[in-house]
Image (cartoon, rainbow, N blue to C red):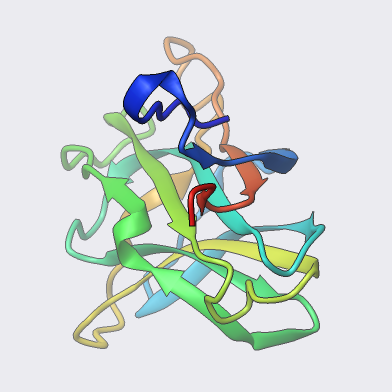
Length: 179
């Protein structure tokens, strides 16, 4: 997959896609309660090889601001041991919607994008893996959530229906062919 040509047009590195999974969330209007953390969306995929990396990207539509200072994260767990995971806060790009008290409030998205290395906890084996999308406040306060609703649907006749879309790609990492 890599297009990284070294001197003279030879491809110096290779990177092969092993497997791809796509997740579309069928759950609409997920009401998010105030808490110090929660995981409103999770799904499973199968990792075919232990020594592959995971590249994940996608988005979650959200509406109605609550507390824009919560730490939104994406983590991947080993399904057989849910305490065996790697969590990245920098995997999420979240711009809070403007404050609004109604169903016609402003909408925005959480954009997910990250690469987990084959040695990361929970990723370092083949088998069933679980992606968890959520948030956790850094100060432990319990009256926070990033927004009031994830995957808003039919909150207003003017808004098209939208839902979470995530793509997970399993890849072999860069291998230097000249060493």
